[in-house]
Image 1 (cartoon, helix red, strand yellow):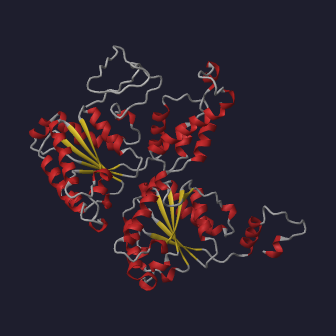
Image 2: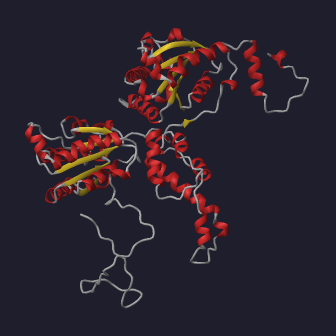
Image 3: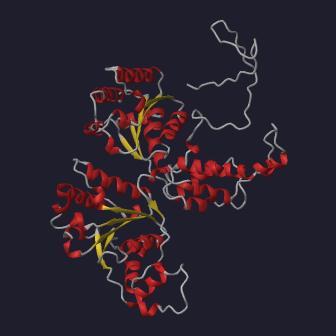
Length: 517
């Protein structure tokens, strides 16, 4: 079903009138064209969505093939896959994908907003669900898109009232019934799979769960090209450079970035625009060109929405800013920087890549600064977490906290994840500081590390005051494979520290740093 938009150009009497059942409405034969018409949701296709090529291939197989060519599945005796769960951070394009699928196969589109459909009145939410599914069946082929599924079917421990439980049962019944019908497909979206009631995920409601994650540099470039294809760009605009500098940005962030760059160009021309006039000089309009500097301004004004909850930074700390021995720097370059930057070379020789290293030594010796310098050298994002922040007395909370941190690290990839004071939860007597919660945090960290492949481009650096108090299980191959001591600074290191710390204040000529070192 496509909406037809009409514009009123004349009324009698003028200028106001009331439209009733007796009002005569005349439609002109020639539609009025807008000067700038954005693509509406009813016109979005696969080509209007960037950075999700692999995901679209899966979705086409599951949606288009069964609807357009059901005989393929009947011939080989296979029940066609039906329903799809899309998961990923807000702004990655889950809703756009659902709209594009409906438009490409010319199907009716029915939207169920999880936050809006839940009603406090008993039975009203279930009734609303049934009506939507019944309407979809009448207008098949149809796509039913459930946005924010976790609001309708949250985990049992997250349910605060009795309203949500009947909705989950009704949803399961409706989806199970519609799986037998060939022309209605249910698509749903959530930001995290683990927020959803396991009953919805484990009992065949959704045949496929597809990750719509944060785009990488190549995907971001594709998205930027889509958003700037109708923009007037200056020759100095380097979209590839912009894509490399927007770690963690999702599609919505990149769209906002392009808009801000365009607005900045308009702001720069405000001094030659007469705001009292209704028309703008053609010469001024022709001079409007979005420059690389406009994008640079927009970058300084924006940040990645998916990474706001956890502080993500691109460190400016370099090796020269740290007073540590050359031996330590060489170790870190060989064990961390080179494998992180060139994993394919190590994999060619059948080498198992390490996912982490331990830095150990007395407090104040620069372990955090070294981790930042590594991130700078690798041109990676940097996330620093004190493990005490992950502890909670509530069942399931510590594990969820760890999962969230690792999810953010994967989304921010390439990323260095720095876990400070790891000895507080990784000791042999790990219950000493946080009880059972500390033990669960330690276990979840190991689970996340074991599930992390080299392709994820995330490296974990743990910091501790001493390696001998850490449980041996953390040193298993593929976890924290290497121990690097960060000792108290020697004379040369102390000299470097003095010079770094005193490089900005005015220093008298007779000050001898060697004497203090």
